[in-house]
Image (cartoon, rainbow, N blue to C red; front, side, top):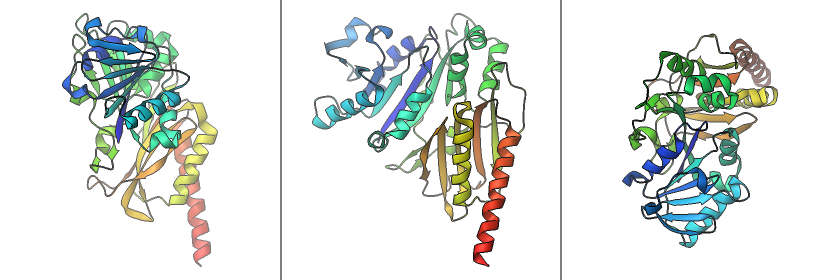
Length: 335
């Protein structure tokens, strides 16, 4: 499987500097990068070996590809070239979004295109945040707040110019309580911290659910003026598979664009030894991944919600109602 890393962040937040330095690292020597325009990334001239059409091959062994018609077409073309042997056999794919872009459509492309999903697994979403201007940007630009909210890891940049103010750290915690905050110094970051692997790689059977889910508050808390909130539902009793299906369908139908992201691990009654991992973005849900076993002794279901204006109590009530209805139907059918 090819691991995909989505790199997002508002204009001027340091994505260009970060990506340019990462591509010089040996850990990124077999990486393909998809960007909107070549001009948006400041690759030094000595890095560029050749440039043909929309593909740039770097002396480090990396590839840079410009989005042609749409993201899916570009990924399909890269995979075809890889299979034909006309490009290096890359093992990682980095997708850099525009500074004004919503990362949700990128996630949805990776989740809904069957041919891509069969070969590319999401390794995570990294959002760069400017330590100097980040707090003002988050308050002023709604898309910046959304980029921070959906991240798996938040990366503070320009810390050589200013220490991150406490107000910025608090704001990031409010927007995304599950994502660890990393520090880039002069654009440098430990690649292992940035890319700690996908949630589940079927080739290695590696599972890092705790890192992927993070630690979200289980109580309601005040959110900012943008209405973005993070909370977790933790459940000790197993869920029936039908209950989970109905719950996800109802969430997708009624919440839509306000469901910025949902991810979790679920104890399914019919499969107690193989938990289901779920991942959703707005209207789109990835088919559940069935892990070969529990990664720890904790078998509680944990659902992490990143939402805009959706009350936690409403979500809890919906799950409880569906669970009760399915249990009643199951009891009547078995009697």
